[in-house]
Length: 117
Image (cartoon, rainbow, N blue to C red; front, top):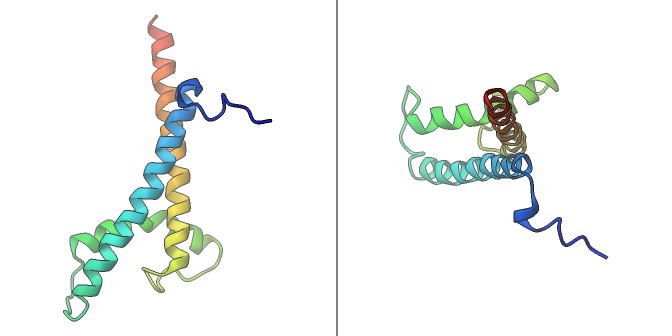
C-alpha cells in the first residue's frame, strides 16, 4: 500500500516545499548553466584570451562549493573545470545548499511571524 498523502503537493508543509524547490533550483540551475557554458566554450574554444569572461566567472562561482569538497578530500581542484565528476559534484552540492537555503528562509520567516503576533 502506498501513502497517497505523501505525493500530494497540497499536503506538504511550507518547509518541505521550500526545501524541494531550493534543491531543484540548485540542481537545475547548475545543469542548465553547464549546458549553456559548454556550448559557448565549444564554439569559442579557438580564441585565446588572457582574462576570464563573465561566463567563466559565473561558472567558477557556481562550482565553488564542489571545488571546496574536492580540496577537502585531497583532490586537485584545478583540473578539468567542465568534467563530469566536478559537474556532478557541483549539482549535488548546489542542490544541498539550495535545500538548506530554502528551509532556512522559511524557518526565519516563520520565526519572525510568531515573534510579532
